[in-house]
Image 1: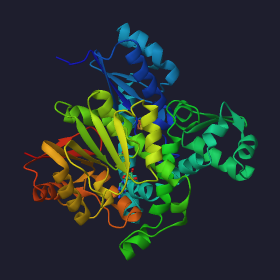
Image 2: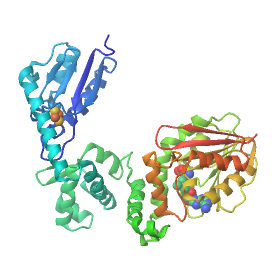
Image 3: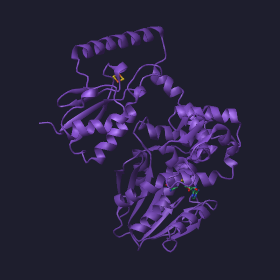
Image 4: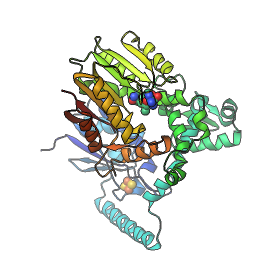
Length: 451
Ligand SMILES: C[S@@+](CC[C@H](N)C(=O)[O-])C[C@H]1O[C@@H](n2cnc3c(N)ncnc32)[C@H](O)[C@@H]1O
Ligand code: FES
């Protein structure tokens, strides 16, 4: 028996520009529309929507096949979605005007396409052409640089409800011709739309990049823009072995952007960490390098009896104070300006947190932190490390392996570490039980318990 009443396979095979494909004919908009309609009509328990690779009928795309009956649709557009949902998924009767049922012609086209594709691939291989996957990876900096520059210049806010290149250029104090070229590239990336001379934000750009929007991520993303400049030093850093100072490090907004970037990552993860650790028996928490205070704030919100101390460097503590005050939790969260590498931690804590901290430091510095944390914990206290944890051979997961380079270019001696390294440091510091808790997303927890 089929687990779903209908199973939709929609082709979303990306192909190089200029080659016919379903995405080039609008299948991503169809996908978005189907997803919305299926949810909106309450069909998600009856209909399974799956994207699939090329079906060999690219000139007739977007192509979708609906099972169990095996009905093939061609040249679907987003504007057809509600008619298909009405007729086929709700009414049980396929939408005649888009059905393609000439099986012999479809098979011939698909077989011919497959042969052409294999021949083209063989010819490219013989000629020694760089595979698309490598080419895309190598040029990956282009879209990244476009969007980071747009964020640095605050272009999306300047576009507002719609403006032309001249108006936007003036607004961001930029050269009109250059601004126009950047705006056009942003349209090509799907981050703006253009009608006549006017540019508009897409719903996504309006939501995430425009000043005043509730979900604006720009401030946090400016930290990524700052780090981009550090990554440009990678070649020299690999030769030299450690970070190279750059002018941008001195920018007055650097710390602000850094902490906003940290808050952007932490605010959604913090409730997951609280849930994973629980609050039973937890009264005092030390949040080392607490940054925006997101984790202490989540604990304080979850449990009014919890008192948190956040220790961070003096430049950051005023920013932490803003986040804590905004959350109305200054009675539960105390701020301690200082240096975790040498300050006395105090004693009697039930939890000491090192969220996104260990990757900043060397092995020796982390071992010392763990030893001092062990001394500051109460009986049954826990040391909690949250970080991107490497596999034993340190070649993955990819995020952790790349992040290790992020720390190479940004710090004196930081890196990503493996679970066995964390376990070894915890055991050496006297933690009797050590466990790993995986969370959704790229970081995990390593928790050491003191008996
Ligand atoms: C990567 S951020 C993590 C912030 C926060 N724990 C989070 O996960 O959102 C590192 C934090 O450690 C702080 N920090 C770095 N070196 C420190 C030191 N020696 N002593 C105290 N805090 C430090 C930074 O100011 C920053 O707030
Ligand atoms: S790309 Fe969709 S059928 Fe080929």
